[in-house]
Amino acid sequence: MEDLEAQADVAASGFRWVPLNRAGDLCDRAGNRSEALKYYGRAIDVMLEDGQPEPARGLATKIVRIHPTAVRTLCTLTWLDLASHHMASVVVHLTAYVESAQAGGVQELAGEQIYMMAQVTADTAFRAAAAEALDALGCATDADEIRAWVEAGHAPHDVEDSEDWTDRCLSHALGSNV
Image 1: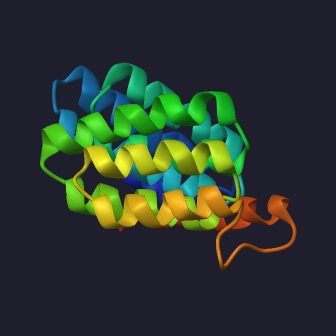
Image 2 (image 1 turned 180 degrees about the horizontal axis):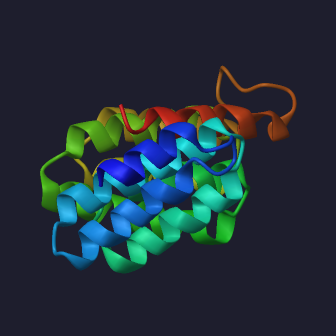
């Protein structure tokens, strides 16, 4: 692991994630799920820092396939779906995120993230799904506020250009590890 850490430190931009992903794979094969998820999370963060959102989304999808209840990864994947405007898969990942957050006892944190997603994303269908997700997490006040935005057709803070949410979603995806 030390060698892989050293390789990540000296790798060129755009390739720093490779040794971290390899470390995650090794930990996963050894049965150390928590260490594997830490390395995978770092690999995703490095990809995002290096401006590689689609490969980061691919790695997040791999992690969820291996560990379907990885709460942080599901949060990040939902943010990345939103950033890429993959609206067909975002609700699937949002639902899995809510279920994993409930199972992991982190409903409040998930509620904060989902509320933020609804603020950032100017998509009515996603906002409606976010309101349902917040209800499931016990965040009825936030859910009601978002439903009011859906009924009004916009939120008070919406920007003119609905495409503008991409960079903000990527920023939040990176911050979801904090």
